[in-house]
Length: 591
Image 1 (cartoon, one colour):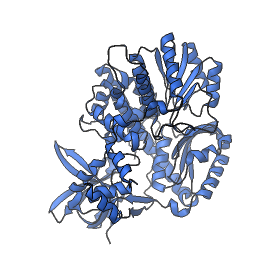
Image 2 (spheres, rainbow, N blue to C red):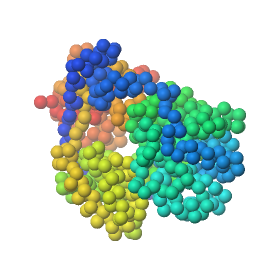
Image 3 (tube, rainbow, N blue to C red):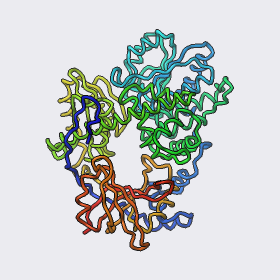
Image 4 (cartoon, rainbow, N blue to C red):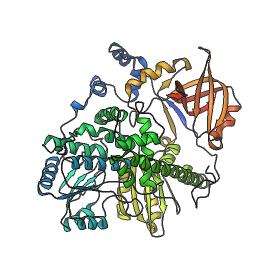
């Protein structure tokens, strides 16, 4: 719930306690021969089960997962059009042409923009950044922005994390005399823009083996190719592509790119760079988030650093985050990081309000029982927040969810989907109703005329009815395996070999049955969270646990002594002392 400290104009909504029960689904045990094979190779039973749960089942897959290194990255020139892109940039440097790096306003786009600008400046290339305003301009290239770039004597535009769907805008750029190089990782449309070069590993004819990189990963591969082609720093900095891996890790984790394949290599190396960083902007960001250098992991990025970077574009202008990442002045960085922290608090408050209103809309209209796909909209729901709301609702109700800021003339929305429903494919089937759209299998953004929203909703729901079965929409909570409380230290140590965790390699989830509940108390503002003390009977000790955003369920815990718990194991630090803590995902009264 929001308090009286909410931003002006925001009225806290009355919370709804309605919730949807999730079916607990413990993953099937790995086959005995698989366990035996991995045991002979030195893997514990728990580690083997976790690998099996992540579909890493062959010796080759497992060896690549653990042994791939920076040196094993594929040749960036395998990316279609990379040679053309490099030669055009070479020519621009020789001729002294001004290049614009045109980014997206999320963390992936901002880090990609900062990465290219930093390298280009070091290499003596005349370069300027351009990041559109989420509300005023929207996603991707737009004609007014291109006009302004021409007025600034820009001759070459390089997009990062956007552009692959901008067919009309690229054509307009060509009429203005601009060359456009697109670097993007989103799903290409059937008709590609007539750009000078397109760097996208998902496009037909691209031989690069890894298709899962984020936008910042694509920008990083461009830098790798430039360095291989001899376009190197001339400013005495000695900057190498590897020196930019801190930005690659930030953008990749924040974009929820899959952490297998090359992304796993880049993020692992990037985390090492982050933990010893001297980049003033990241140092200041770590301080503002209350984190400690040397102990950063993907969770630190996803829940500490990333939300602050994203808050710039969601609440105000993403250029603030860009400036933070590239400033050389620590005091300036601290001021910008504090500004982003304030914007992140504002983002949290707005998210709480819109999420509550959206959930009330779902339960009031019984949308989760009537529809395989839900479309929700509100006139006051900020475009920078709707994607977060869609993600939360998709997770809660286990079905595709589209959430829109409904305007009088046009509406902007974000979609999040389940694995069994390709949301960008479905949205693309309705592109005749849209002004613009783009995205992935499970996340997309779009803009349309408000008058067409009802037809758009009906067509999407029809597609969802055709492709989704009721059984697949039952919310399920996937669990890796069951543990006793005396096994949690061993589980944490053995699972650590699979880090870094993230999309497609999630932090392990465990279940413990009939845990003895010693104490329960509400914590946080308005008792939003619950702290539990569990008694480990075999060791005679207390195990601490925390259930975030589950304060409304505290009465269930107060009425029982034995609970079944689904949780992740975390290393917590309190008053300088490290301790284990269970982060409760769900619970039930034991039978």
